[in-house]
Length: 275
Image (cartoon, rainbow, N blue to C red; front, side, top):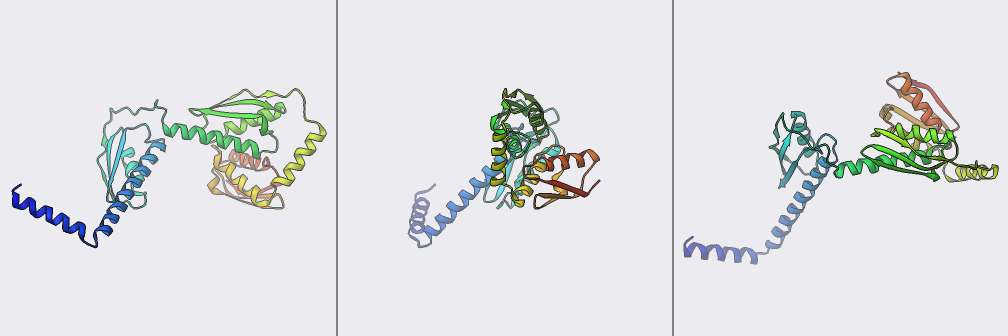
């Protein structure tokens, strides 16, 4: 670079800095940069959580709203999925998908990454919630842990029936591969006074129609065998009404049983639930 041109560039830089628009330009640049970082993080996190992509070594960078994707996958559908996820992020205007599809590429499914940890934590939370909502299970004595979709129940249960119900609730939770039920039956059954106290606590705690409806819907959502999106739930004075469609008679029976077992439910109307 010659001396005259270098002096010209230096002087131009000084003038730009002294310009009244310089702070605004700098602020705009900073905002754009922060948006890029946010979008990169959101896309990368989505890949880490997605069960179809998390085992692949994918990288993403964003420049002024344009996402650049690199890495390897073993199927074209995975590459397409990566593009769709990136396009769904707010502020992304373009996607340059440079991901290479190699049939012999082996994703690292054995890697216990962030996505698996989130899955396991979500499964445990869902089971704890279902135990707490269930009127036939005393959730206070149960401890739930999950690793790789394998659930372990430890602690105590009030009866063999409660232990069996806890096992069924856990096994019917989305994402669960197996259940090791190590709950121990309590030596002393609940006294009449304890039962009355628990019933009184139930009645004073929760049992609004809105609470019941929310818990029935959530239980359907957590279930691996119920398509809750096709079932409408309403509650009036503890009476739950289910309407919509299910895929089979067994799904219908499970939906009815699930609703009946929620605390505060007096009965379930299911004549409008068809298949």
